[in-house]
Amino acid sequence: MFLTRYAALAWAALAVTLSPVLAQTAPDANPPETDIRPAAPQSSSLPPAAASEILDGPRQGDRWTYELKDNVTDEVKATITNTVVDVTDKEIVTRASFRGQSNQQTVIFDHNWNRVDDMVWKWTPNDGLGIKTPLAVGKEWRHESTSSNMTNGTILRTAVDAKVVGKESVTTKAGTFDVFKVVYTVRQTNTHDSTKSSNSTVDLLYAPLVNHWVKRRAVVRVEGRLRDDTTLELVDYSRKP
Image 1 (cartoon, rainbow, N blue to C red):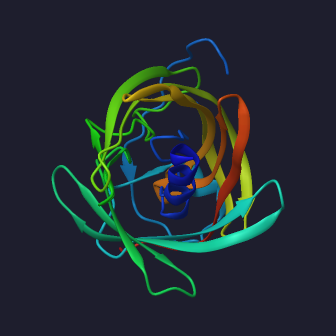
Image 2 (cartoon, one colour; image 1 turned 60 degrees about the vertical axis):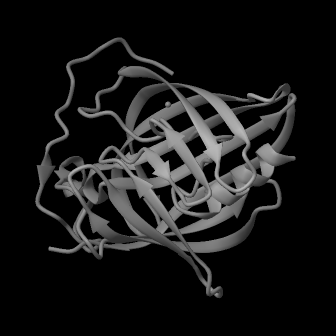
């Protein structure tokens, strides 16, 4: 089904994690917002105590490597490295490469890590699956977008509800990080056939220390049936000084 197929592709490609079909934010009552201004870049060897500080913006050569796991079978399906190729005032251009494969995918983000274009899909204004600074527990936002498939003409309409539900510490193969947990609820509909729709939940753990997510789980249901349950988990990263 087109929704599931794209969701899998998106997860496989970096943020290449949620496609228009995914969306990779439950509760607290509006505490004061925590500013998310950049601090100095750190490396994965730094102690977890530094993880509560936000890094400055991405630089050419920054990279994050993830394992993509199918939670139904508990199998690692791919290892994906996302590398920053270029940074402009408006965009972050990244390249997703897959271990053991020669193919690569270009994915363009805005500076809040919302996807804009991945050479197959184009989002107007963006996919709404990034973050909104400053992050604070209890913060909520809503986003609507249209995604167009540039190869087959499919157009999807997406509504995203996001909420920062907490702060916690998480450990992956790349280290231990302080993270904001953001939960996204996403509904997508094919504009040419409203019977083709999907509902997805995305749990994103965003670490200011690496200016990226360290874990991202997406559960996708099409017509009420589970189609995908996948997790991207950070296993390595490096940032340019």
